[in-house]
Amino acid sequence: PWADWLPENANFPVEGKSVKSTLFSVSDCQAIVKKAIVESMKKKYHHRKWFEEDGPCYTIEISLLKDVATLTIDTSGTGLHKRGYRKLSTSAPLKETLAAAIINLSFWNPERVLLDPFCGSGTIPIEAALIGLNAAPGLHREFAAESWPNISKQLWTDARQEAEDLMCRHIKLQIRGTDINPKVMSIARYHAKLAGVNDFISFQQQPLSELRTKKKYGCLICNPPYGERLDNTEEVELLYREMGQVFQPLDTWSFYVLTSHPNFERIFGKRADRRRKLYNGRIECHYYQFYGPRPPKKKMNL
Ligand SMILES: C[S@@+](CC[C@H](N)C(=O)[O-])C[C@H]1O[C@@H](n2cnc3c(N)ncnc32)[C@H](O)[C@@H]1O
Image 1 (tube, rainbow, N blue to C red):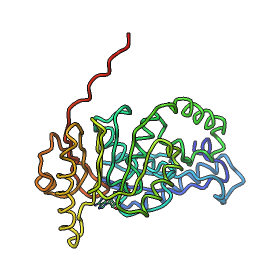
Image 2 (cartoon, rainbow, N blue to C red):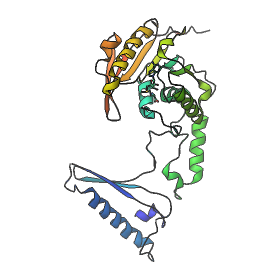
Image 3 (cartoon, rainbow, N blue to C red):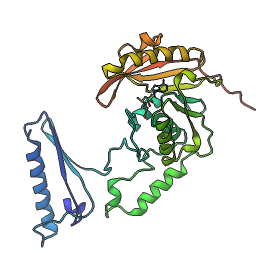
Image 4 (cartoon, rainbow, N blue to C red):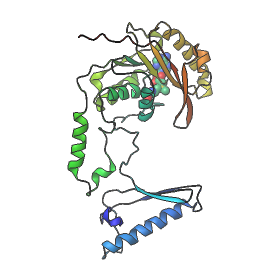
């Protein structure tokens, strides 16, 4: 019964979707579900004709797919891609989950240097630091179910404590983010602080042309401008050509570039070892992977 989950004062908006189903009017499906839940609740809360709905939120979804209806209660609230550290906005930031995915698709590991020369609001360096520290992705956010009386506060405290205990805080990470724009640099630093990883990343304002490093076997992972608007296509192509020149001396490095530009490889001047189709929101992109040599194995002190 719904009343096992929903307290008397529960706020329970009903969302809906219908795909390839006879019942195609989503608003009617939502209304029918809402009414059915109210009727079910009345059986427990007899005296009620009307529910105030001024308590904790239990968002319900009716999802119809090929005539099969699935009812769910949303325990998360804000989308799970939101980790809770990105409070300020910049132009064209990557979703946190996509940034984590492209890091996981690379051969980066916490022993290797990671560099993002177009770091914007810092999503790639921050996600890399969270991965390196083995931090649970949702550690710094809230979940809708935290306000539900039927899940004890202690359970949340214990789960957070367990995630904290699993973090490797003593690890040394070499993660660097640079960007030409000084304004986004301060935002990146602020976000890294909110994510609790500011001690593990160095951010520096720097144009790509000044990129130099003596480090070896690093991974450069980036999401450069795409030139989606016609008025900046030429600028972006110049930048991709510059990337080809600036990256060339880094002969032990691996490069990973996410862009929607159809001619990236030709302008950059090299064919990728591997490319994968990925969507950045609705924008179809490719993730170009240029593999450098593997780092030498560390000698064991026996
Ligand atoms: C698509 S955004 C990167 C977004 C970032 N991944 C994030 O999640 O916020 C591209 C970034 O490239 C930077 N950029 C453009 N031209 C540059 C250049 N010549 N050198 C360094 N950074 C540049 C822009 O300032 C912008 O922040």
